[in-house]
Length: 56
Image (tube, rainbow, N blue to C red; front, top):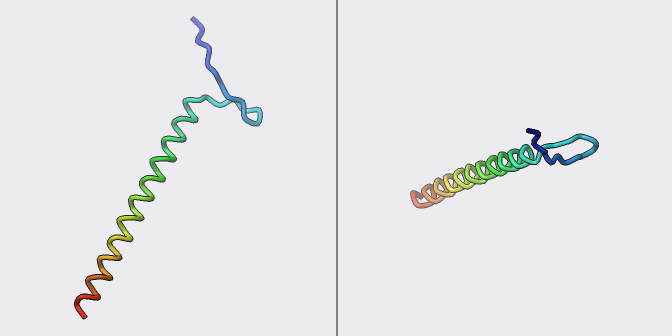
């Protein structure tokens, strides 16, 4: 039984749509982690700045 696989052709290279989906999901996850870490670090810095201001 032969299964037909739809491949995209980009610059003469055939690319599987599942591979494109996996790459998009991985990039989205990395971007989400970046935003999460950035928010955590900036929140921590703001907390330190506020606590230093209260002590003085």
